[in-house]
Each structure stands twice: as structure tokens, then as C-alpha cells.
Image 1 (tube, rainbow, N blue to C red):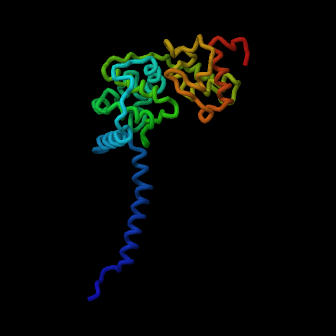
Image 2 (cartoon, rainbow, N blue to C red):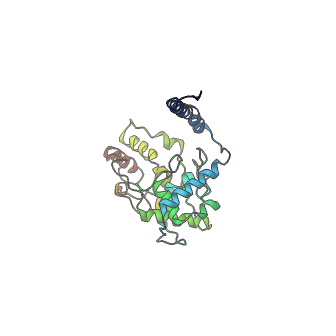
Image 3 (tube, one colour):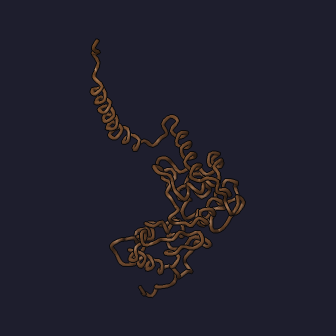
Length: 261
């Protein structure tokens, strides 16, 4: 008795067509919708949290913080203020200036979910970042010892022991100086703000304490890094941009005020 249904070859073609149509719908409908939405869908946050925990647990392994959970170092505090606070907030509550602007929002480092993550997980996330979120990878900018210092400082914030640094915000006039096609000083100002230097050091080097640059003339730390500060190699900052940046910095470090380049 001969069946009336499609042949094996016909069924295979239908499966292929169905898969292609599904992929097209995902690419043209589902992905744009996902890119535009700014609020959690049902179970979305729980699923995202589970996946981040799973990936970081696998990637982080059993590494332990060599500084210990009770250590608060100036290194970690300065690095956090410059690289993390803009999103996660000075206190770690996820309410930094950019923390709530995107989706998903910056993690609340004071939440139980963050506290439950191991030191190894926090280290892995900080070093490698999380794809499809706003969390960048800092492994190319900070040495492992600096990332561990960040982990220790995050733990201190979770325990209510971290003290924040109040970096002055740039004024409209200070931002207006930036011009990538202007004088060396104007070009350097554009580089300074584009690279986020002002978020850590203040618009004119006027951040408090060790972050301040007003009395500091050396700029080698830009290339090679220093305690709590990442290094900017030529892949991130060209030699021409570095020279322009140095010209701008000399306007507030006391060098170059008489017009030297």
C-alpha cells in the first residue's frame, strides 16, 4: 500500500525550508526587537544571571584572591574610581552615570547575587568581560594583580567599608576645548576625554588625592601604566595622539604653560 504523504526527500526539503524561514524570522524580527527593548521580559533577568554565573564559574575555576577579602588598597580604590564607578557607581550600587543608560543595566555589586559570586568569578568577569552586555574586558589594560585589587575593593564596598572618591565633573567650557582638528592642545583635550581620562583624573587633573595630576609632569604612566592605572599601548593610543595628549596635560601640570610643545 502506497502512502499519500510526502517522500523522504520531500520531508527533508520541508525541514530545510522551515529552518531557513525560522532563521530569517529570528534575524529580521526577533533580533531587532531584542535590540530595542529596555525592560526585562519574563524570566530574562533570572536567565541572564544564571548564564553569567555559569560561564564565570567555569572560566574562573578555583582561583583565590591573593590579597584577601579584607584588603582595601589604594590601588584597587583608584582603579575602581577610574574604570568601574562610571557604570557601577561610587558605592557599587549600579547607579553610575552610564549604569542605568543601557540594557542590560550595570550590575548592582551590593546585591546578593554579586555577593554570592566567588572571588574567582568576579576576577574572571572583570578580566574577560561579558559578551552582549555593557561589561568590557579589562585584561588587556590591567595586570592580574590590579584586577585582584579591584576584586578586593568590590568586597570592601559590599561590606560597607569602601570610601568613594569624588572626582569633579567636567564643565561645559572644559569640554568645549576638545577639538580633534584643532591645535595640539585641543586635539589632546579630545583624546583626554575620549579615553575617559577625565572620569578618573578630573577634566584638568583636579581629582583628589593620588588621582590628581595638577602637580605632576611625567606622562610615562600613560604608556606603561602604574599602580591602579592601565597601560595604553599603541593599539589604543597612537604616538601622535600621545603627543597631543601630553600637550594638553602640560597645560595643567605646570609644564608647557609658557608655550613649549
